[in-house]
Amino acid sequence: MLGVTGAYVAFSIGEREADYVLYSAGIVAMALVGLCMACVLLAALRVRLALRGTGAAIPTEFETGRATRTEFQFRWLGAWPLVDARIAWERPAGVDVTLEDEAGGLREVVTPHARGRHDRLVRRFTIEDLFGLCAVSFSVGWTVAYRIVPASAAAGPELAVGFRSGDAFSHPSGRAEGDLVEMRAYGHGDSMRHILWKTFARSRRLLVRMPERAIAPSPTTCAILVAGPGDEPSCGVARLYLERNQLGSDFVFFADGCTAAARDIHTAIDQIVESGQAASAIALDHAEQLDPVRLGACVLFAPAIDGPWRERVVAFARRVGATPTVIIGVDGPPIQRTRSVMARLITGVTESADVDARAYAQIGTLRAALESDGLRVQVVHRTLGTFA
Image (tube, rainbow, N blue to C red; front, side):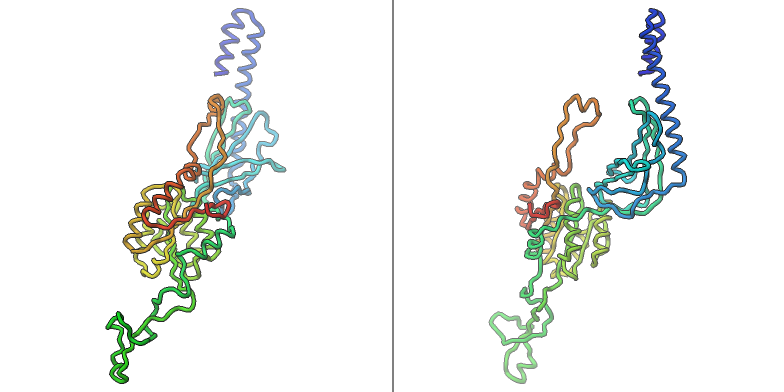
C-alpha cells in the first residue's frame, strides 16, 4: 500500500502538477519499500543458510510456567540494517519465546505452558523490517526428545501438615484388616465362621480368630490424576505430593491415558507428563480394580475447571463405596491488563479469557458442587503452597 501510494503521489500528482515536494516524497516512499524488501529477503536467506547443520540446542526437560534459557543463539543478524527477527515454536504449541540480548547475539528464552513428551521441535523464524512493511517467515524442524513437566507446587508448612493429617492417610491404630492370626474369647455378635472349634473340643473354651492390628501405618494410599482443562496447577500439586513422599513408600498412582499403575516416583511423574496428551480418561476405571482397602484411602487430583470429569468422579466414589479426597490446584487470578480499543486496533491483540482467571473465579462453585456430592475437597494454591 505504501509503495502504490508513493507511486501515485510521485507520478500522478507530483509529476503532473510539477510539485517536487510530493514527487520526492513519493520516490522516497517507493525507495523505502524497496530497500526494506531487499534487506528482509537477503537477511532471511542469510538466516536460512546459517541454520543448516545446526542442532536444536535445547535441554531435555522444561517446566511449565518457568522461563528457560536454551543454548540456541541467534547471532546472524548482528550488524544487518533495518532488520529485526522473531522466533516462535510451532511444535509444540503453547510456548512463549523471547530473545534476550547477549554478547555475540540474541539468546532464546522459552516459557512452556502445557506439559507433554515430544520427539520433535519446529521453530518458525520471522524476519521483518523495523517499520513493519514486509516480513518473511519460514519453519525449521529438529528431531529431538524432550519433555515438559508441570512446575511443582510450593512446599509451604501449612500444606505439609495438611497432607499428613488428612483423612486419606492410614493410621497405626486404624481398623484391624490383617490376616486372622490373633485370637480372643468369643463375644456376643462374633461370626460363627471365626470360632476355633478344635480348640473348643480340647479345652471347652470358645475362642475366635481376629485380624492382627498393624503396628506401622498401612500402605493403602491410592492417588489418581484426572486430566482436563485447567489441570496444570493440580499436576504441580501431585508432583509435590510424590517428590515429598507424602503418599508413603507403597503407593499406587494412576493418570488418565496410562494403562498401568505407577508404584515409584519416576514412573508416576512420567504418567503426569503423558496425561497432558491423553486421548482417553481411563484412570478411574483402572483404579476400581484395586483392593478395596487401598481405595479407602484414595486421593484424586482434579482440574480447577468444571467439566464431565466431575460426574465420573462422583460415579467412581459411589461404585467403590469410598469417600476420596479431591485435591484441586489453583494458581490464583493473574494481573489483569486492560487494553483500550485503540491499543487493540494498533497491536492486533484482542482480549481473551485466561484459563487461570476462569478457574479461580469458579473454584467456589466447583468446590460446593463436589462437597454436595459427599466428597472431601481441598483447594491448594500452587504458587503460595497454602490452602486456598
